[in-house]
Each structure stands twice: as C-alpha cells, then as structure tokens.
Image (tube, rainbow, N blue to C red; front, side, top):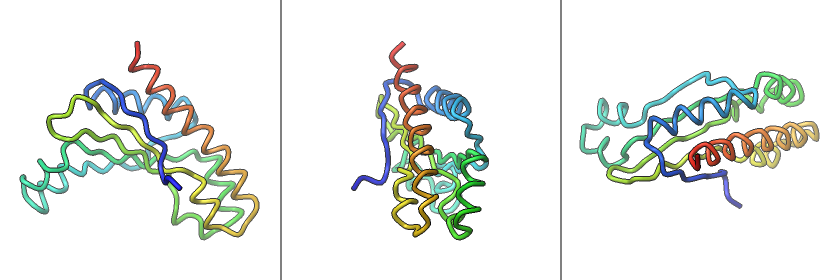
Length: 139
C-alpha cells in the first residue's frame, strides 16, 4: 500500500508551495506548522546535507472539523494529526512534487469505526487539493 498521494508539476518550488497552500485552504485545511527541511539540515548537519535534499517543505495541515471528529472518536489518533503535506524539489530538478499522507493509514491503525469515515472525507479533500495543484500547474 502506498502511504501518500502524489502529484508532480512543472512549476518552480515557491509557486508549488503557494498553490498547495491555496488548494488546502479551499478544502478547509489550515497550515499549523511549517518545517523547512533544507534550512534545518543546513543548520544541524551542514550545507552539503541541505544541498543533497534540495527544496523540501513539510506543511502540517489540519481541517479542524475533521480533526475534532477524529480526536473525539479516538483520542489517541492525535498522534497522526495534522496531515503532513510535503512540497519538494531535488536540487537541479525542473519539476516539483507535492504529496500528502494517505488518511487510510489513520483508519487502518484505529479500531474505532468513526475514524474510517473521517479518513474517507479527509482523503477526498486532500485528493481534491492535489488535483487543484495539478490543474493550476497546467494553466
């Protein structure tokens, strides 16, 4: 089983980040956290390590209504929230990849039936966000 939904677009990294943020917002997700892996690697491991990963940003996205339903059904499920969305481009690459964790993973790990419905809804929203990024890049 794949653990992520992925699209690859022929747009610059910064444009893909902007498009991903907008598409997530359109689907009711807010970005609660942002981790710039390249900067983190440069600071902690040196510039060579940062250059090896290229542009790599993790957006910690959350749809509050879905998250509330999930945590109410299974308080321990919070360990899998928020939904991580990665925007990455390897050094020298012309294409940028945007990927989101597949919410089905959450449903597989919980014994609560309510989590499956939340995962289905989150999956539909994340897939719609990725489709919007793809469509926006095609314009």
